[in-house]
Image (cartoon, rainbow over all chains, first blue to last red; front, side, top):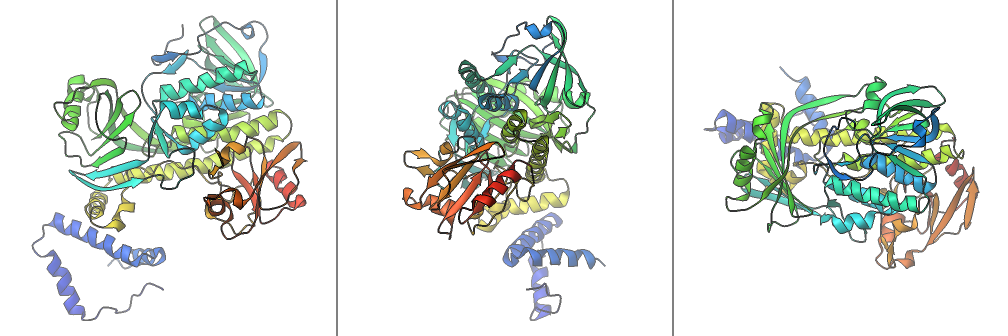
Length: 64
Length: 539
């Protein structure tokens, strides 16, 4: 398995709305904490260190 | 008297004037500077092997204060080989279970030794002065049996010159100065090592900006014998984290993480310490303050642990944070790594090159310990907002989600280093278990009424499991004795599980320090001889 950077989420608009909805009414500190929990949960789900590393690299490289 | 640097808890080796202090400098094969746990373990190992050794210590006994309190399984195994393991277990407090709390709530608990069939527990807790006293008592017994060990208390090293073939040490005593010579000198003189300073050698690494308060208290308490660790403790003024851990004599180690900007003198005032301790234990608990100290720590090491005829071991060579019990425990492993090598070279059996492997192997171990220690410290003391956010997210998840628990790091407890890929290793040709791969220390198991490690006496051993081999062989001046085992000897199946895996038979070549040199499915005299040569640094 390789990291996919192609569209992979069904109903992109619906997903984006759900993501923002989860943060609605959270303070900045609570949002930061929420994001950290979410990243940890997702990384554990992926599990494969190679894919996680590729995702970290992609996030670094795609900055702006 | 010399100006003391600390108070002595037990006076064990009072200064006595010796003949060496008159006339021309006397040459010694091995001189150890520093009579702490590392220096004394090295002296005992060398002396039991028959190599004469002189220990210089600038005090007359062991220092006060609990200091190191967790002695790990590997240290106990080494102590068993050296003869004082039973004394340590009898005095120490055995523990295997740890609990981790976040605020009021317990987020999980762990058992460090779920596997059976080991003589030793994962850890015992024992105040360092007791460890040192029991070690010196074993040295006294060894001396009575003829082991050539000499301890000179009240002898302080004040200068060192490397003459190439040997070193000259200047020594200060209450009766004045004298000089002595050594073929090899081992500096076990602690983190501020005067030997390292006098040779002007570097000690690079990281300083961690945090202060920890230790309050060892004596009390009759009903807390279980477990390691309790709090992140963001719920008691008043307990700081960022706190620890509760039992020691012998009804003494408990309390440790509070106070942060960087504190006034040490104020925090050490007994009333201030008592307020903090009272908040943790409850107002109605009666206790006595036994020892208090504030420490900061660094993770650093020397680039190499050998400089000509001078070796560095323990804190003199490398320093870690206390989280994970990697200080004294790794120092004892340094001592055992060096002892058999120095003995073989001092007796002319192995060449000087074998001694280079001490640095290679123990630098690798120090790297591993510093890595683990640094990771634990970064978890305990987040260095930025985002690292604190992730750390707290891990703690928030750990109660409900099993996946987050392995991420919680309050110190990964000390395990012996496997010498993977280092020069003394021979071939690994057995399709065997990972835990007994080449470079690993042998894993213990019960055999009849005893234990496997008791049968690895401190010389080279050829352990065979359901394999034919010569009963004994001699190669390059080293005698190798055979330990012939069969998987049927062990109804528990541990021998099979830990040394055979899927293989039907196995041959292990084991070093004097119980690390595995090489392993094969069957015996072949020529390849075994070649592997012995490699383990002696001849390859």
